[in-house]
Image (cartoon, rainbow, N blue to C red):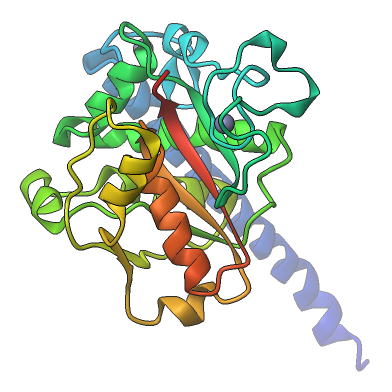
Length: 275
Ligand SMILES: [Zn+2]
Ligand SMILES: [Zn+2]
């Protein structure tokens, strides 16, 4: 007697629920079909072009065409562990260039995708990233840097990312700071916090021909910590990010300022190192 209401209504309710579920499935399938059709139509009308070389490619590797990916595949063994300079295959176990070996340096390590060679695709990428149209390159380039850092077991070897600062006048002219774009993309790829904690207060006149000691003097005082930087870096390992390292004097000055502000260690990730 008392069971009738439940027994009669339950199958109907179940049937209604299953009809509802099937309708939802059908709607979702139609939406998927439409999305797939639209994306195929869009790709036919506007084929995706490689943001680096501008060529069309059907298969992509982390946001670039296969040929660009091949040309940007990083060197892993023949760069100095400390400063990223080219040391060749005979670097041996030290993994350090003659300049770094046996010296106290502010950088624990430097990870570079490669060298800033005259006709290399990496140099082209670094120059393109400075242009407004090349801003989209920050993500695929940072992805490659992140992969390299994972390969070298350095991806978890820091606590915080800080981009190398650009002089406000240069950043205003360009509309952005490419080091900051790169740092943000690297932070996203490695799920690490990114803070702009440094400020460039003047532009150093740096010539590669200057001897190392003069370069250190020339960059002194060009970078200062921002408000609250001390609290942010105290006792932490800070990864500095920049697009290119030429003499290394500027990034070492950034490292020196961060260490003076209380950072436990500093290291660097860059796209390219000049020979
Ligand atoms: Zn390409
Ligand atoms: Zn070195």
